[in-house]
Amino acid sequence: MNPQLAPWIILFLPLVCAAVILLVGLRSKIISAGLAILSAVVCAGLSWHLLLSGAELTTSVDWINLGAILGPNAPFQFTVPIGLAIDWLSRPMLVIVTTIATLVFIYSTAYMAHEEGFGRYFAGLALFLFSMLGIVLADNFVMMFIFWELVGVSSYLLIGHYYSKASAGDAAKQAFTVNRIGDFGFMLGILIFWSITGTIVFSELPGRLSAFEGSALWLAIAGVLVFCGTVGKSAQFPLHVWLPNSMEGPTPVSSLLHAATMVAAGVYLLARVFPVLEASPGALDVIGWIGAITCFGAGLMGLQQNDIKRILAYSTISQLGYMVLGVAVVANATHEATEAARAGVPMFHLFTHACFKCLLFLCSGSVILAMHHEQDIWKMGGLWKKTPVTFLTMVIGSFALMGVPFFSGFFSKDLIIEFAFFKGWGWFALALGGVFLTALYTTRMLWVTFFGKPRSEHAEHAHESPLVMTIPLLLLAIPAVIAGYPFIQEQFFPIAHPHEVPHWVHYAILGLLAAGALLAVLIYRGAPQKDPVFIPFFANRLYIDDLYAQIVRFAQDGTAKVSSWVDRWIIDGIGVNFSAKATWVAGFTLRFLQIGNIQAYAFFFGAGVVVLLYLLISK
Image (cartoon, rainbow, N blue to C red; front, side):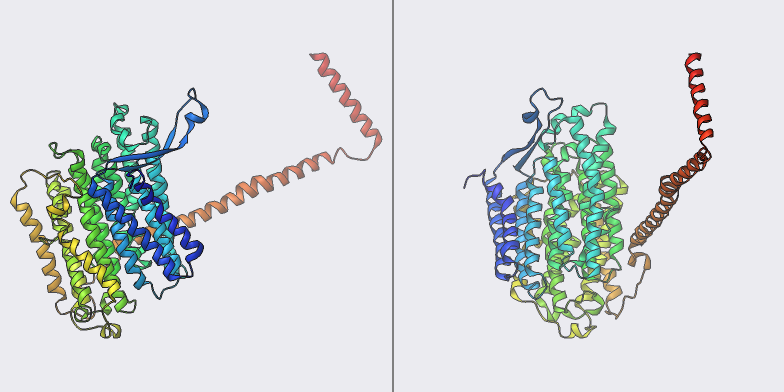
């Protein structure tokens, strides 16, 4: 196949399949699921081919070219290409997105078999895949922003799949609205880069940073504004609130969102503009602190959650915090390594996280299906005997999440913490705290869900999921273990390593991991009927959601009061009442002149003529 053609097929095939499903496949489960799976499989095959061949290419066509329209003498030139870039960053990302999408699509055929809107669901999945692939392949800011917004639209449709359920509709609207806040900053950042450098193409930006010479503040502002897009999409503090609520969507959607698509887009963006961020220490400081605070704060919020999917959602936020922190701590850290090797550090954790987080969410879906769609872990218990495959694979995914040695997360997350050691005690301490919290809430989830006695009738009669669901679990369990090993990692990303990390750093990481897991076992070893350590501050998500609710309520009340004042004093007072009163006063005054006496009218006319003659003569 022509290498120039493969990226276009990868990009547009899911869109074509989504359109066909909507036109002719909504009433046929076989057509809708088959077309969506076909698009994912073909895209995955082509992506693996590009990765293994090491292809490097850029193909583009002009979409907007004002120079061609207005001529070479136009006051300014502006060109926006639809450009697809196949390079060291997009090749492995394509493989991650399409491979995981294929497994999730197949898994969905069983999970959604008896759910409403089966065809609509698969059309949404195909559209979502198209949108994410556009982000991965984009070679310029404008094209990425277009697909960035399409991801927002398609995620809105998928999160709100059960639209008749009020909480699902609210979650979809919240996800869409919160992301628009971050995207507004992203758009402003794009405009600043274009206005100062004159380009929107990623590969051209590093060579034009001299335009910011003497304007370090503007470079930092532009970098932070672009980072706002990451704060929204990758659910970083303070725009993290939408991600746990997005669990209202079907579980396979949660798996796709959290593993390799929407939330990964923000980290991918930072890796794409990494050479630009390295030139701005001010922007990196903001990025580092947001990432460190998020990885620790999300761990605190996950400690007392009882919904199995929400626990995993907060773990995703925390791990995304590690990736964002990784961008800051590795920048300019190892000058012997290439820029790609430095940017590869957070991408390495994105890669391993995609494997084990997809596994964990699909395992949670298997548990939920076995429990007849019950998601509260305190109504589970004793499931390890009834769902052995799900139990085994979830243990593997959990060990990778915690960073247990010889599992994938151990290699990628510990690398970020090691770099943080050389960047400052604040970031390092928060990253270490995240290790302890991750081990604590993950072990709690495992213990309460799978051990002890069944706490409900559904738990008593739980059973293992069908093969079409358990086979993807077994397949994902393999990379959840080995994805961090050098012989696998070297095929995906070049990786930089810090110099001479003290041994006590490794011991501290392992010690905190063991302490968190052991503490959870000690607290929950009796598998009680309810949570014995109830901390409202953590259970209520540090009251951040409540604070936002109060702000929204205050804003609504304030808007209502302002609208009432404007309506009363501006619209009615000036626009209506003032006009009416002015008309009445004018009429009241003029009616004294309308007395109905002809002699009086003649007198007024003569007086007027005299006044006019006086004015003319006085000139």
